[in-house]
Length: 272
Length: 272
Image (cartoon, rainbow over all chains, first blue to last red; front, side, top):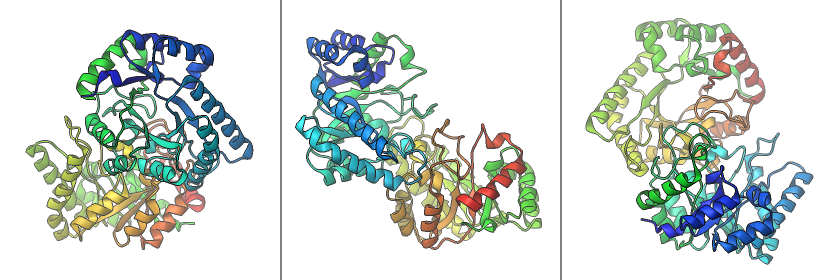
């Protein structure tokens, strides 16, 4: 059973709450860390966001998100570079343990996923000096293969590990059970990710998933053996926060935020 | 460019047509092969189905489908075994080049995907003598990881190749671009599948996919580099039919079947 004090609340789980409400909710329920999305930070302003997170004594497990490196033209690539530097600055200001990278899919008009993957490696490589200087580790999050076209062309932990091997210090991985649970190579690749696991995210895969993006389940409501994967992650040396990230437009986003947090706490006791 | 005489029509592409209409449509447009689903065969009756397919001179590229080996109880396993033997009998009667296997997901109440995968290997193994006697090769179709829970826990060609290595003669693979296009190991695993490729299926992955099951695209409307994958498949020795299998509840299933067939023919000239 996971220690509930290790919970981090990814703010995407409570789309119905502002960052301020998320921070106050965490404090109210004894949740010690938060993983904010940049849009919610921007709504509040970076300084205010930093201050209220600090005032409530929360760790920042990660900032979501940088990435989106894939583009067919120079202007698009430059824009991604600038946007990623801004995200690194924000992560540093917030004291985030890492910046999560959703690396980007196949650029519009292309059918070349191999080229997109190469572009991702180049893009992270170009960003790396800046990230190292800012002391913000970059966490590559492999996304489920169903997002290969539109969101992220790194779709297995094996690929993410390969990129880390290639780029060296300053890059690691974020492992989200929703994205990787099906992978027959998962145990082996988690072991291979030793000392580079920067985040561990939980939710559940619902048997009757209704939507490709916005129908993630609460831990315990689906088919993922979360304790098994967590065990592998801990054997690989990870002891950081366990971040709850549930995109759920038709269910959890429609409920009262306090009910969602209470459910997370009770599910942690039984399913994480 | 693919030779249009190599097209096989998977009957799921024309949900709006009976098997008889599909057979007559193929004949009308010079399509030389068909891949029927069992439910459409049953609607017409096996004998009549066999006769009209033969009368129109069509090859049967495959019968869809056997499989569904995963079950937590003995009764479920026995039922799957019986159902698969019936499917083999039908495939033999139809002169199908193979029986496609959709192997089954995680059984209700379980979260153990490794156990489900082991059960699939056992299930195919138990069926193999019967299939060999009937001279019906079994084609394991790896399904996209988004179906790992509810339809098939074999989700990469690598896994399917492993099962073939383990079970030997009489088992091969069906490669559907929709399921495998994202896989970074695809080129390597297709080469490894040499002499065991029993089917090659095409459709397309739409960038803005709306549904996990029923929103496949027509070739050319999505992001899959079909000629690249076809080239790998042909380098691995496959020269059989190219089966068009498009589940499309909101688009192609709502159109006139003749329009769909004409579109397939024109897309073959440009995108396959």
